[in-house]
Amino acid sequence: MSAALTHLGLLRIGSIWSEGIARSQILFHEHTFEVDFTPGHWDFVSPSDSNTCTIDASDYLLRYPRDRNWLLRFRLRDHDLLIPCLEYFTRCYGRSAEVRRILATYPWPEVESRMLGPCDEPDTDVAWFQIVPPRLRITDTVFLAHLQREDAARLASKAIYSQAESAYGRGSYAFLKIGPWFHDRAALRVTGKWINGGTAFLALGINGCSDPRGPKVVVIRPVAGSTVDTPFGVESIEGAPVRRTLEGVDLPDLTTALEPDHDAETTEIRESDVKVIGPPRPIETVKAERPRSRNGGGAVLANDPTAFATGDPCGGGKRVGMAQVYARTVVPSAGVVQEMWNAMQALHAEYPTSVQSVHWYTFADGFRDDADFKLIGLRRFNPEEEESLAPDQKRWLYFNVAGLQPRGILVTRIVIDHRAHFVLEIQRRTRCDLSENGEWVELEEHFKGLAFTLAPGADLDAWLRDVLSALRYTKGVFGSLCARCPGMARPFVHSRSPKETDAGRTALLNALRKLGVQPGVSRRPANGQSDARDGP
Image (cartoon, rainbow, N blue to C red):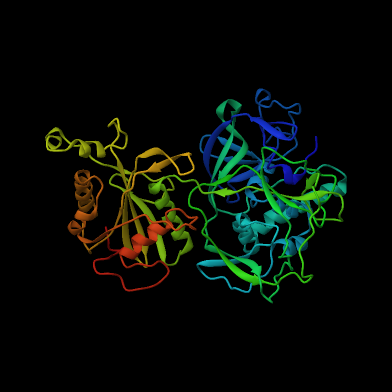
């Protein structure tokens, strides 16, 4: 069986198909691994070379145990992580199949002309300005931004076509080595199986990955009405081709033998989502006017296409529609506590000059910037304390209704313009409720957070022990406790903009505004703020 490169995101390993429909999926183990994309921390290996990659025959169920395909190998502390290069390419080089098609099909000058148009807006320390061409998607933005600016992304991408061209010249199959396109630590959420007696994990699918750190990316999106052309040419506006979206489990007839018609209907076919692990890269979309079609009219649709194809349009009358295959980028909701920590890390990445550091804190660990934070557990009531409490006060203390685990509190510090500011968040219980459309959704309890700064010389531990002890009696209400802070303390609500894609960002900025702080804008600190260099 042969398949187009653009179809690989639909034909996932372990999926079982019949008559163009994915009937079932083999369930593999899912794990999240912390890896390092910096050269020297990974290499290429192949089952065809027993000196570098030995996979036990009992773990390799295909007919060709000496497979010549290449795998990415990450040497972790106790085991290896193996990822097929084509799977990494399919899931991590942008989110649309068109990105992969262009990189594998064209030499570099053509790649630049199709994907990397110039932008009139100059980059700043806090924002990169990026144009996304019409056939690519907003979810490709982060990859395109690094491809336009960083040698690591360009070198990794250029190697793809050069390998394919070299193999074509030899008249042989191309077994591509495709590696990471940025150099930093990262997280990968993968599905697969443990092999070689548990000494290696063979990842057969990638379900999530972390975004590379860096400035916010501002996407310039053209809209109709301007006299200014765009670097990617003019698109038809009025009467533009109809678009429809299909899930990847029920495919139309995808062909690799023909090209789509010029006047073709476009069908968007969605692969399985790719989840963002950790803080998502901030992306903002700005509309810029573009000219209307010079021919003054829209495309005439091909009637009832009988097949769909990816690639460049060619000719007409074949009844072959345009297929755009892509995956959504999904930022999973992990609850307010996780979202606030993610938002802090994202703000640090967006304003690295103004926001010097972000840390979480516990009495035992001190200040840490590890991606996986820890909570400070509230102290249980002793028998004497419980005697005077109402039943709802006793119940509130515990994260689980059974009363086995006390709630935790996330304590974070964010240093802005060399001043330390702190935010407290309460661990929330969840419950299921019916939404307006009749679906069951998971909802969290609502609590305000607390933002505070400390006066110079104030004891952070003493204040935390005081406020966390008192919080047990107020059932999570911070308002009455603010006057006890040796500095300035303000509760804040967790409002969220309907257009917000970076969960927690609005709430965090609201907390900082309560303290008179705006990241990226130098200002005189409010009274009572402590300098991070002299603070606790």
